[in-house]
Length: 451
Image 1 (cartoon, helix red, strand yellow):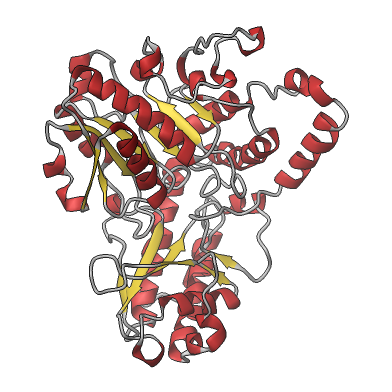
Image 2 (cartoon, helix red, strand yellow):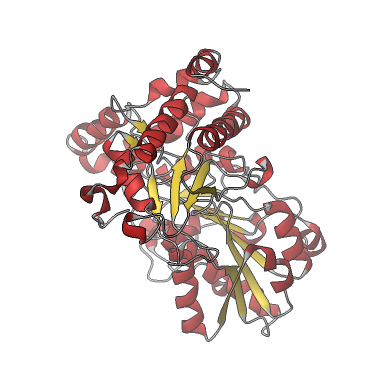
């Protein structure tokens, strides 16, 4: 059945989440399909940031640590975020960057895993995991004399051997949008005595996640599907702004584990049990608070709060379940329209069709040799031509060949503010760029620092 522009407009009119779009400052004439990289500005953010700067900082000064509750803002935002990732109250803090938080949890996980099994000397991860995750793991392995093992997704199960300490994966692949079965993989790892660290950077706020654990004794843990540690990003689907603080979650059975050896290694004063006692020795705060480190970035945290407030508003409209339903409808529509209207231009779907294996993005490869003068795929130039038209996606470079990691045209669908007419119009622009070979213009083939 052929889908028309009017069909898309009708779906927008019937969308129960359509009012959420009003929370965002979307530039006129722009179809923003890059919220999986940087989210849109919440309308409330400029006034909130101005208030923090002008009143809380400018007028109230240092009193605001108490009067404006700056001091416990990481915990309060963590509790606001927790329902989005299936975590319990007082189990999440918003702080630092994803990379720093990953260093914290991976260090703690290695210490825990190797305490009882020193022979566990490996970290296993996916070869196409986000590079910063692999860099952090590589650095820790070099520091401790361990081994980082990288495998393809289909080989994860066979890689869970008795010498593995930690399995470190990203829930939704940043290049393809392919989503792991977190519960099944975690259960398999636990059955082999392996701890799991999950990166939710491309999940939180876009797909439902269930981190919340069952019992904490060993036998229950061995049979459980609950993760052990998780980190995630604040500036993608959570719309916290460029460089927004990230978040960290730790299973309660690990969070307050006694002994400094099992703690995260960045024992800064903000993670101290009584930071303003100013004692010379470090005494960790209970639970997740010990995963804080230095003084917190209050302006950035306040901007992130504006993004999280939209999810609080979404709860009355069905919450993450409703957002997921719309996300799948948007991505289904995009896949169908591209395959119908852009056929013959060498595009290949890199994102799984199955709903259970798809995040909230759709990625396309393009046949190698289809680029200018037969060199390359032209994927980068196509994205640049779309951006010039106001359709903003992004490009991710492949391995330069016809192997499993080809160049990617990447489009993210944030159901908070993307509509069905947006999808129709984005595909129409893509069709025109391809049909007219507009992407071959020289200005679209000049590489920028950020792709």
